[in-house]
Image (tube, rainbow, N blue to C red; front, side, top):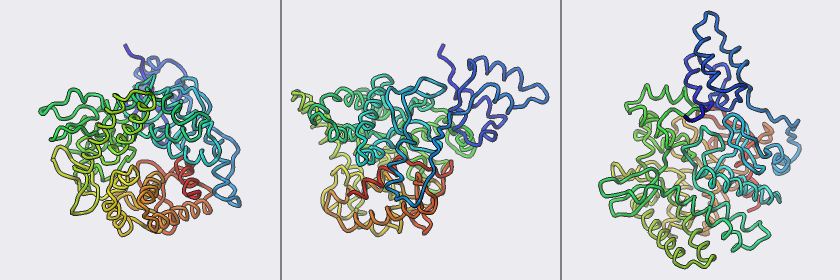
Length: 498
């Protein structure tokens, strides 16, 4: 029988509102148990019915709160934001772990985002690395690539983060971009770097394509792969589990009470949206006004498929450098087919924009989102398509503080009026790829100014920003805006130096 995990006790304690005691749904699954979990569960079952039972006391006797990293660091806004960020890297660095509670140990030091996020996160880390590169911290870039390689080799993929309750899902696959970034930092050649990580890249691809061999005209989807009507294979977000997320158990359960979907279907859609990193956005809703209509696993996301195209391009090059022309040719064919399929299913010639594709209804989604910038970043779009997208970004998305994520104000944190560092970078570099410099520079100026404004006011670099308002401090979502903040720091330094 498998060992009990700490997050599996969450539903047990929910009936007495453990979250209200700790103040955050993520805190409990991050706690460290003081004794075997089976023993704690048995004690709780016996004691909870006793008159005068005190959950706070029971918790204190059986669990330790997650470790707090107190460094004595205090922001000094007389220093520039650039100086602040470079000093903050040490504050956000965590040393190699021993297994404790839900934490999956990693062999090398790494950067955490900050705030409530006490562990490594997959796609955050690439944007953090952009700043580490400009801070001459190639050692940490190497460590983080090796940590992700370790996870791929031990877990079989890169989880959302290095917590047991994240097992079952990944995040947007930026590993190939990390290896490409490392190849510029390393004392070894690009060839040596790509060949070194070739088999790890191959395993990453196998994870995302798992089940593709089982697809037939009658069974069109399997895990993260979808067989389109013309036989092309594209990808979606997924999670192996169909239960409430441990870090948001109460919220998921409450949503299930207002949704017409079967609970297990709803929970899978919620988890798949968490794998996307866009948790949450009306992008994933069938009815843009209703969170309860989330249907993530029915959607072919344009950004995910652009990322996998880059992974396949990297594998083509890596196999070529290793001397295997047959494998190189296979990946060349794969990414060429994927590129054609992205344009076929996600480009809308009438609206001049890229949209996600609902493969169940066989129609494009109608939501305008910044995912449309990914075909520019990865050079999937034609020059005419890129120019048309740029015009829409300028007229519909660009605000005083940068680009809004969607045109919809839903109360979800990945919708308007919020802007997020990773998407600003993707759009910025995508526009530069097509020599669309005026809007790229305007975007850069607006975003950097918003970052500086909040830093001067609060002494913090934050997870997201309200790009539509003068104050720029964002809100919305399941938890308060977090400070730190890894990917904001990385993108800020990268943009300032671009």
